[in-house]
Figure 1 (cartoon, one colour):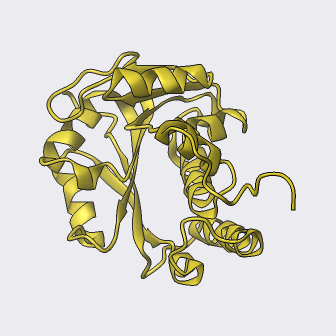
Figure 2: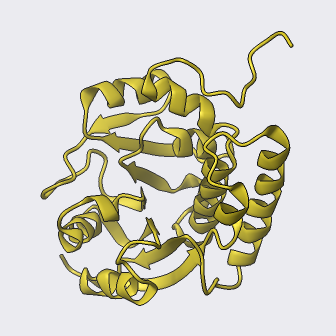
Length: 229
């Protein structure tokens, strides 16, 4: 058959390759929907909230949110090359070293998103404390971490509390999606469609109820309004 199969990884640089995959792949799209639902539920101002994403990669989540009415978005990346790639896709992005103490350009924020970042830093408490310093009182942090690591549901709640956050929600997610995907990075189109539909169902479920198991954890913490720091 002629034409390129969109489920075949294109031969491009890593940043462009990821950006192409994010727009259709069930795993990315489900994560983005989870983030959108959490931000609509907990970020002050909702779609008008001042939102930043730490370690934003190719900017896929920010582009997803932008396409759904969120208007005040900023990404942060450690390398100048990554920052340039995100900016070329029409998203505001600044360079930031998140391994030590940091002050983000544009702070304070209504909400900060850190998807699968907490498990990559050597000092998780320090990262969370710095995130808190870059939030407005009443602002929210949205986290995801792989559940197969040593970070447990109760442990994640404790990390948030010890960093000065009020843990609002901590739940498992991806309860069955990873098992059904068969571990394929590029599933066939029919399977990707099924997993997208199941991801929508799980996102709807998580609006009201937690999940007791899953391959990842999602958490929302709130900076207390009366916290002086």
